[in-house]
Length: 213
Ligand SMILES: Cc1cc2nc3c(=O)[nH]c(=O)nc-3n(C[C@H](O)[C@H](O)[C@H](O)COP(=O)(O)OP(=O)(O)OC[C@H]3O[C@@H](n4cnc5c(N)ncnc54)[C@H](O)[C@@H]3O)c2cc1C
Image (cartoon, rainbow, N blue to C red; front, side, top):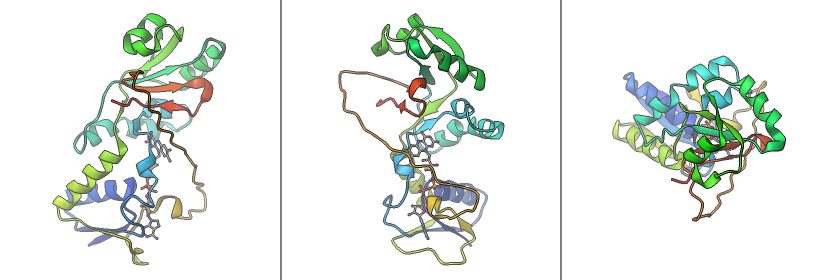
């Protein structure tokens, strides 16, 4: 029996890989479902090439498998990522292009064709056609349901035993050389604006808007 501490993305994904290989697995989470996990707040971007801007090649290589991995579990929208910058930040777009792969440079006309709601606002963009996105909350529920169906017991609301085989407790795992990075999510209600894929704005390097469809 393999016991995992933490029922966030890392714990549940690891449980899935182990159970598919024939292991018996239980998962223990100290909090009630979703309450202690950052995974519910993820943007859901499956964006290995964009991550490559600041991550090592291995992250890009493994990340390219993510869309197919998730597609076995939950709906994945494969419409790519569009990276744009206002005219004054063209240099930033060039820098982003230099540091990443898997994109092509597109013009205003093509940006408008991909996302009519952006019509004429940006003169150039980068299109990462292979990237995808999903709904993280649904993905977690779908993953959990699949695990339960395969006989995995998931215990919420009680601390994991001290001697678990795998620790996937996210920010609570005080690892010496890692520091947690805090993220924020804002949900905008804008029924008149239709955006159908992940949109990244380079001038606000960390601001990424995900399609609501
Ligand atoms: C705002 C935001 C946006 C993001 N956007 C993206 C994105 O678009 N694409 C992407 O790939 N990544 C994104 N990420 C990153 C991604 O969400 C995280 O890397 C991932 O969810 C971390 O999962 P985890 O399982 O390691 O941690 P968590 O989801 O935090 O899970 C850890 C679990 O451990 C439990 N726990 C803690 N201590 C104990 C204990 N002692 N015993 C038992 N259980 C315990 C907690 O209750 C929690 O449920 C984003 C993150 C944030 C915050």
